[in-house]
Length: 229
Ligand SMILES: [Fe+2]
Image (cartoon, rainbow, N blue to C red; front, side, top):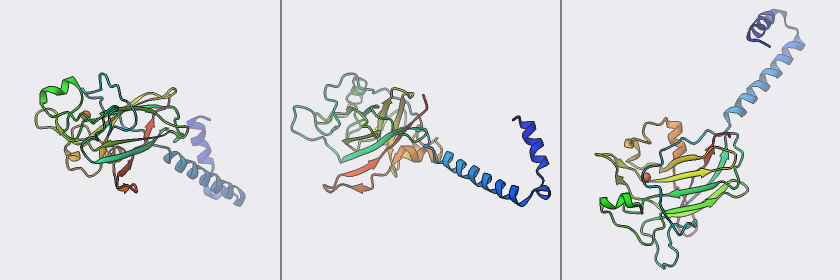
C-alpha cells in the first residue's frame, strides 16, 4: 500500500461512519501497534564508539581475565581491585556468544605498559597485567578482575578520567571499540571524549561500581551492544 492509498483510506474512515465492530477492531489493532512500538523501544541501544587511543598493547604474554596478577609473579597490582561483568548482545538484545573481547587500561599511576607512554615518566607496576583477551560464553557473558586505573594528562590541560578500553570482535557483527568510565568521577564532565555525548549515551558508558562481593571487591556491569552485521 502506498502512502497515498493509506491517506485516502484514513480519510474514508471517519468516526461517524464506523460501526461498533469496526471500532473495536480498530482499538485492538491500535493496542497491538502500541505494544509493538514499546517492544521496538525496548531493543538495546547501540554502545557508542570511542577512539582506540595511542596505547593499544603491542605485545602482552599474559592475557587471562585476572589483570591484578602477572604470570610468574607473586605480587598483586597496586590499586583498588574491582570486578567487571557484562554481556555482549546485538541491537535486538540477543546474546552474542564466542565474542572475543579485549580490554586494556592504565595502571594506578595512569601509566600504560606501552613504549609511547614511557616519556611521561610515570611508574610501571610490574604486577599489573594491563591487558586481557577472553571470549563471551553461550549467554554472551564475560567477566574480568582488574584495578581502578589512574587518570592521566592527555594533551594540553586535558586530563583523562579513569577509563578502560574495550574492543569486541564478533563473527557476524561489526567490531566495536569503546571505553568504559566510572560513574560519578569528577573528571567525567570535562572529558573531551565523554562529555560531548548525550546523557543517554553517557549512561551506557558510565558504570556504577555500587555492589560488593562477599570479599569486599566492588563490582560493576558494562554491557556491550553491537550493531547488526
Ligand atoms: Fe586511555
